[in-house]
Image 1: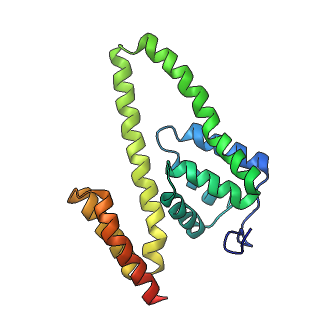
Image 2: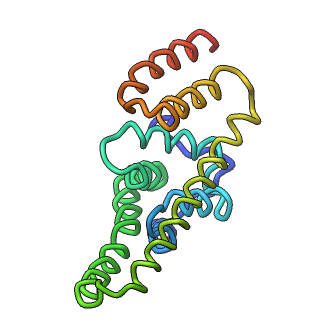
Length: 188
């Protein structure tokens, strides 16, 4: 394990069983969006990472192919337990939802045409969107508190480009990524 990938000295080192349990709880709690629950469990409750470490690990996870939270579980698990840690965290994240979704699919096939079910699903969707907005705000807070330089401006520009102007994400990424890397290189 390289020095850059090593856990910080202030963080608590979880066991493999703790990794599995934590990601199992995250996966069951975070149906429709596990990232807010992962951050709460890892940063706020267990103190396994600082907010900045979480943001850095999550940023790496966004560059890897596949779902971000799945990538994060592998990155986080390998950071604390190597390959077994990555496997255990991934199993904790993916196992419980697989069982739950299989059961729900059987129930939906039987009762999917009920009107009350569509109302329940609409309410769950609204809650998931609210959780996503809350975690984005929580993840951005250290960036804005720590310093007000070009980094938050890049984030704001990306938000405006994708969410407001509705430009394609790959185009916004192709323009802003080199600008961000250049600014980071110049200011360090």
